[in-house]
Image (cartoon, rainbow, N blue to C red; front, side):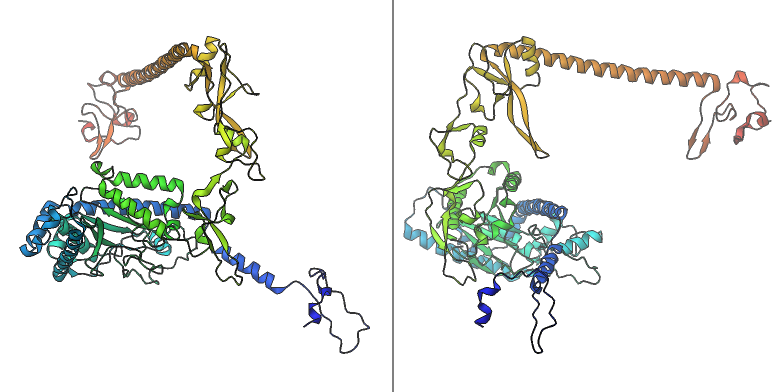
Length: 640
């Protein structure tokens, strides 16, 4: 082995052709030809095969849009079911089914007010009794309710969606009924027979009927849009449906404990279990569960409020769940926030005292999650960051690590420093900061070699003032106005469509405002909008702009009037032509469902036109053979 470790093998060209063996080789000599290693071809084939299994750009866009569509539809479904749970007739009936002894256990909770000051010991006792009462209520409700095997909501795979789309079948065609009205919902709960989703919703109505602050929890199950693997669509007949329900619930209940100021999670059907979530939650499905995930867990209260409570039921929300949600992008986060606000009722658009307590709990739980276990989970993490994953315009200041991590399957003991995300700052070039309305401080040097600067190295840009009506301009005769703070003192900005025309009409000094750049075809074009003039001309600019605006409106009205008159002229001309034809040749017959309708006094002469009486001989009678012209005669036009 020592011979093959020699330095003589270091400069061998593996790609060059091997020399032909000479004839003077002795018998027994071994000739070794060094060529291209075989494993490189295997790597290329493996990489090519992996690329073939990745979906294209159009399919990625479709999956993302379909994911958004499912989110909106399922959220609307939750809003509707929450309204059904608030039905007064349903709650009155459910309350009547409860024994008085069981209702009396909840009286201390119902009468308790937020302003009541209760000693800590009494709060503990009250909370314990409240939990016992909830357990008795859950046992009472679950004792008589019969769970059917109706498949409820579950997560679908992309191959199933593709198959259903190709077969022109509804996505809910595998269920027994494609529609479920309130009457069926009410009937199922009153008869105490239905799916486990219906049972959970009925339990929420029962909690509300006795005056408890209960929320309906719905774990939305849209398909995973981050799954970029191609699927081979097989025949629906050949492939059996695997729509079995998950071992974890989709719907459950939450009840507010006023003694402990915490939400109590209750599943009266699947687990028959209650918990106050601390670290791990029994309601969070396993990562291997293909039919259920906890990416979007929504709470619906009795006042129509809608809140995202995924943070409570996800142990690794920042590291794992966040990457599967549409909120991982800024645009998606904005859309999702608007969707939640749209689903809320008007009287629950603002947070109450319980919401503020819950927000503090979510923040605390986020910090208790700790660091991710893998290097990949650090990417775009909201709390922690690795220096190797920074963007080209990001820098860590101060560069003080808050912990260390190690790569998995690493043979070395080398660790990687971890930093706080709050210490990451955006750096820009001097020109980029100028476009944000800031200039570099005197003597500042770039932090990175790319000559990028942090915000604390800049100061607000102060434009030269307008002097004697003269507006300061750049080298191109315009004025840079990327932010409102870049407006020069003594000047005003007019962004009307008529501002430039008004300034030219007044013959005053002005400068077109450059508000940004449009990037297209590898080139940038300045985007101009409005003008900057001296402040002393503001009133004159307003009046001239008003004049041009009114003039344009008058021209628009005139064009509309002329166009209307032109159409009326065309219409009247057509009427005149039709009247002249009727006078000369007679009226035109028309086809009806019963046949051809004709004038009863005249025949169908003239190729479809009825002749006038003065054109007929013998008292209005005509010769059929002369005027028929190939058209069928009516029954009442035969000769007498």
